[in-house]
Length: 231
Image (cartoon, rainbow, N blue to C red):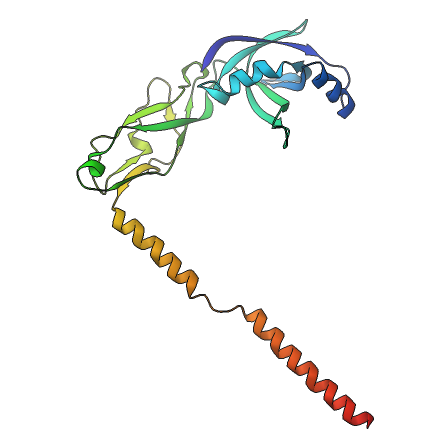
């Protein structure tokens, strides 16, 4: 989704871990802008501004502008990022230039809304299987999400990717048969869990243990024979 957001960026001449540390101390992080036939540009940006975009409703599907001082002002998307494994701070991002006239492949969240009749009236269980689908569309038409009403869904029925309403330039890339959610029999689900527990309980003792015992017995027999020869 295209947003009226512009992030200021500054070019950086040097690279490496020491330079990255200095930038983070100055409340900046290293980043790279590339794509659409242009040269890659090493820059620094504000991690706070980037985090606002990543945690917005449109998330990584947000198209915004990056204004590189003295170089260019271009629409981009965040396509890769790195977090500190301990502090969870944003450490680095990659931004892809976007040609607004060319179609993109994106993953969009799908949210089933409401309580299915198969749950309320038939005592079933509404289970969500897939939380997103992949589509192709023009950058300006990327949706934040798809909200699908599932209140009429009965026991044994499924919501599939082919049932998600698309508009404009949108084209489904995911399999049409991809199950988003379905209403299943609660007893059937419980039986599957019990069967799985029974199978786990009846798994035979590992063969490695038995082989180990035989090898120990064989080793003791060999030592007895060697002792008799010495005598």
